[in-house]
Image 1 (spheres, one colour):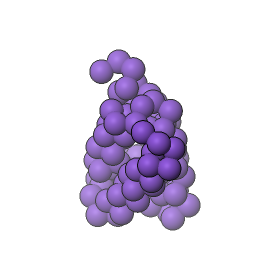
Image 2 (cartoon, rainbow, N blue to C red; image 1 turned 60 degrees about the vertical axis):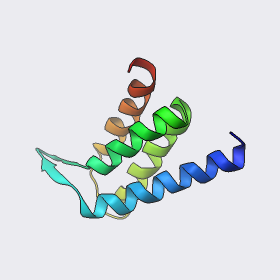
Image 3 (cartoon, rainbow, N blue to C red; image 1 turned 90 degrees about the horizontal axis):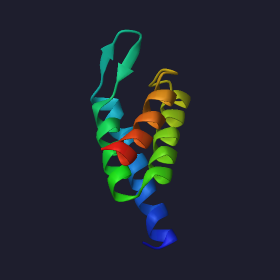
Image 4 (cartoon, helix red, strand yellow; image 1 turned 90 degrees about the vertical axis):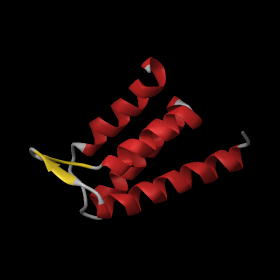
Length: 89
């Protein structure tokens, strides 16, 4: 996959994750759970690999927190699980 195509796919994954997180979420203790972001993380890890998937998860968490939609628990959750899904599943 070419670099421009990979960057475009990463941008689309991030956009879908941000828009989807506004509509589908539920409280899980002190955190908020975003099923759309989890699905995006899995699809990114399978289709793009570990590095881009972790970057996508980090950027989605960063943008959500900057917009006031998420919690700080989005950073370790998204990044760690993106790495885990690609390497161990």
